[in-house]
Image 1: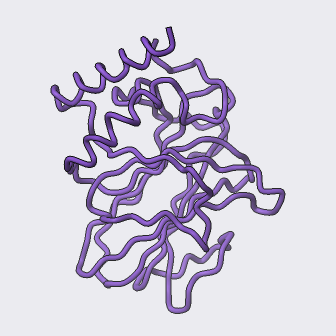
Image 2: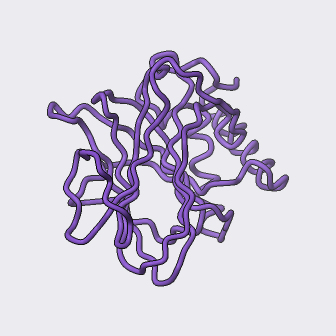
Length: 216
């Protein structure tokens, strides 16, 4: 029965690929913690990717901080947002993120990490607790998400940039880091999509049992 379900998920992915509507972000999984010492290396900040990640228990303050790294060599549009699966226990899970790089302004607030010398940061806070959060259904993974505020800005100074994700309350949970804005699908990306789609549709990217917002 399990293999039949996986097979049906693969065929669903193939159908989505043919229709061209469900494949927006190339999927990746956080198989290890994306720390400052070992950040997720974004090959191209232009290509739209979705990194299915997890802020995990850390035992410290402010909790887990995930780090993503990329390079730009010319003025480049940078797009980042954080999505949260619509699971009952994630109703109050409100991860924030900051884009860090040369030429960005000083944040003016305390951040849970140190800025590299000469760097600035733009903090993107999530909605306040109790605020109504926009939601949407994502056909690629077959589930619904809480949408959050995004960063969408032209960054002009070349160099190394970082994106840090964390929860200001120190909460843990699953989130999706969306980086990039252009739908670009090469052969290896198509293969990746076909491999990861059944896993996502079976909720195997999640670290909790979640039924709400998930298609059958």
